[in-house]
Image 1 (cartoon, rainbow, N blue to C red):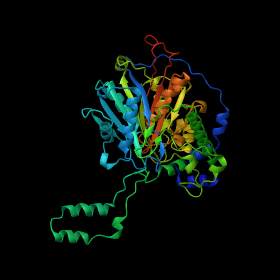
Image 2: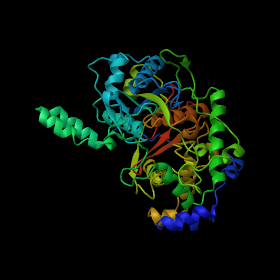
Image 3: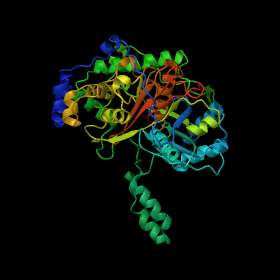
Image 4: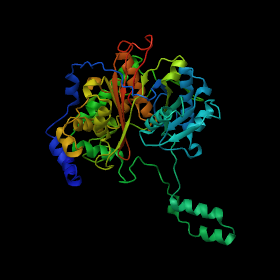
Amino acid sequence: MTSLLTYTLKYLPSTSQWALRFSMRPLSCSSQLRAAAAVKAKSKQTLAKPNMRNIVVVDGVRTPFLLSGTSYKDLMPHDLARAALSGLLHRTSVPKDVVDYIIFGTVIQEVKTSNVAREAALGAGFSDKTPAHTVTMACISSNQAMTTAVGLIASGQCDVVVAGGVELMSDVPIRHSRKMRKMMLDLSKAKTLGQRLSLVSKFRLNFLSPELPAVAEFSTNETMGHSADRLAAAFAISRLEQDEYALRSHSLAKKAQGEGLLSDVVPFKVPGKDTVTQDNGIRPSSLEQMAKLKPAFIKPYGTVTAANSSFLTDGASAVLILAEEKALAMGYKPKAYLRDFVYVSQDPKDQLLLGPTYATPKVLEKAGLTMNDIDAFEFHEAFSGQILANLKAMDSDWFAQNYMGRKTKVGSPPLEKFNIWGGSLSLGHPFGATGCRLVMATANRLQKEGGQYGLVAACAAGGQVCHRSIIGASRKSFPWKQNKFIQECLI
């Protein structure tokens, strides 16, 4: 750890003071797991806003999330998106002609189906009169799809919207080099043999070198894994702590899968192959085995490895979002209200993955809540180091005062309420689809546990984050209109 901290102090002058500050405040994941008296949240009144439509999520589904290069490797993104839409139709029995709009998020687009939402909708049997569009916002693309749906309904443009996301990392577009592309385009425009021969004479073998997509920041040319390694060093998070947290995620996911708690997963019959029924990235190991892995990014002293990072994943998700009055008229019992949301942006170099720390107090203040009011936390797990760094930053008055312009810390979530059915480290992270998984995990947890409030956050490339605080009122907590079930969600 000393060597990595030395590396950070040398190359990260802007964050070196973090390491000096947080090295004195170790955060042991295992110690927090052992410490844990559950704090019962106080029941609060509804957060409905006067003169604003109530917006609800009825239900949501996802295909099993699979390691890239496995059962989905021969498909195209719209195949997975179509499967999610079909699964949602089957789960909710919503008539296709009632859906006013469809929005999907994706990150690495297949050029043949650039508007994957439209292609998937047509493939799933929706009317060609139903508009559909695709959004991209890195790892929070489906979050953007959902909040766009909220905006459409809140403004009165729509009553029923399907939002979702998809990613197929098994088959990403690989381009010719720019020089090769330019030559090919120029050749297509050449009108004479002489012009063609002149262009061909300029060809060089290095023109054939392909351009491979990289999970890297365009503005900094740094991979997110490098950022995670630097962040872990800046916050003095050890390799052991990161491995412990990753093991926790896999162990909790395995338990949730075995107990049938991951109810948003719908089976998918892969053409020419067997039906896939569950996520295949959940692999609890041992700390001893994890310790054998070499650093994946900063070598040889980095602490981020394949074991404590989320993996490249294929998958799709979809949720059904309605205006409350429409849901009631159709006889639905919604799982949650969607109330509010916050997007923030940070420095894409030193604070790329710290968005949850900045957004959490903002969304809580909008709702008039505190951390103690939240029953279920669901944060996207890009890396163990990213999660633990955010927990440390959220629990630091010094960080709040020096970097956030706040007088006091917001406080870190108690681990007994945090990602207790696993997270992206174990369940997988299809870039464009994770947001819907987070929302449905929170809604389902609140329903099962009788909780009232939940908080969802996801960091993304570019130093951005979508934060949504989900508030759920169980049947016991809120007798509502002849005891019909309802939950509230503050996005």
